[in-house]
Length: 126
Length: 151
Picture 1 (cartoon, each protein chain N blue to C red):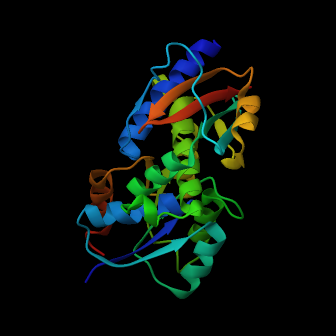
Picture 2 (picture 1 turned 180 degrees about the vertical axis):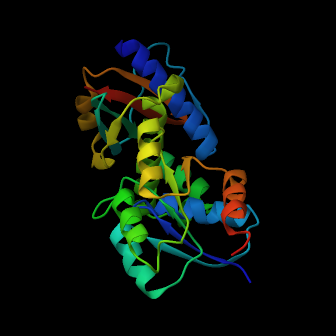
């Protein structure tokens, strides 16, 4: 038994790096889904249940902020924790994302320790 | 100011290359002469706007990009496609840009980042592109990497 996780980033490199880092952290994984933007992520979430979402902010088609707002407005999705993984370290952006409803904010590059701490904090009862 | 900025860009690029892509960057030992760029070269740029406006970029050789991608994907360079190598170097510049903007704890800066762009050009065209821009060279795994700032 493991966690089902969705990684949302327009960069294949970033998605692959996060997936690999989750595996390196020794987190039990059932399935890792990937999406290239917020729209693709919402489409996937209509079909699949996930325990946790890692998302970038700056993406084409639908950015991370819009995606989180859509998730928080949807009854079936509003309880899914969202962790932002971004290059933007500004206090302004972190406050904006917290207000939108994200659970945590990590800045790139992330480490296995960062991910393990976050996953354990939000999923230990999942 | 430009000298400070290019020094900051060099510093954060070395940090990101080492910490994220597991690659070492050093100043070139060319005795002050310009580095010879690869042919073709990839020019990667990213812009930003807000409380700071401008952009940064790098001219890289495809082998550096392929090695960076191999390290990030945990594969051999020969297994890396051009698309993966280009995506990796764009993501590297994206991370460098975040560190560059927020260097020295400048986390009050409110910035909108653009999407990294890449073009493959001949060596002469790469040299023309960066001509007159604040720039500095590194040698990464034996290959030249030229950093520059766009205002």
